[in-house]
Image (tube, rainbow, N blue to C red):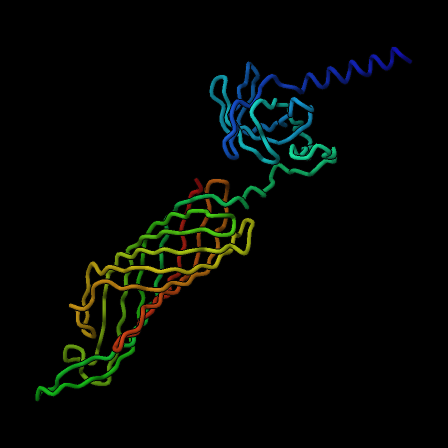
Length: 307
């Protein structure tokens, strides 16, 4: 009986040492870990458990992202890492891991499923930047003043509408997982045309306004939905500087800089840890004057990179 016990213990020891690595964590920064391989071999995509040497418990699962000489760069898939933790090979056939919470001394050894295709990391909000294109629907109601052939002043109204395009770039700063600030700069077209009941627009009933803006926006976005499709609601302000302009309905000398209030709804569709597709519908409202009311609806889509 004693001989069998010793043989069983020896087998366990051999199994443990065969899966244990002398490699250890030399530095931790955010979700990244720098590993000193210390002669061990590994490859990109391979997964390991991290072992807390003080209690020999598994605290995390990491995935190797880059190998260079005696060093490797990994990222935390689940759990927590700390400098000095050692690596243990993760069996390729196992799709679950026993990972203890280092903040709890009485953590249990129950297994928590962690699939290799786990997408929970997509809920992590990070700073990001991206580019977008816009399809813009514009509307304007304007009172047009003109003089008839006798020099008498008259006023008439016209309703105009039209479409344009825009292209720009943004930077998102994550205050928390729920709130993100966005700075956005773009080139945008404001094109509208329509008819007046009288020949008030440069002697014609056909009225128009064509303006190319350099637009700068600041928004606060709130994310009520987390996951791969991260839905958000937002609001803010923008300043639009007219770079070029022509109009038969408006006094061109008065077209310069406009302030707008913007309201938006959108979604960040996560494609990977590094990239997502930003889509949104935004409404820009120009402060109304005595003679002009205008608005823009922008449908945006693009590509973004997480930092």
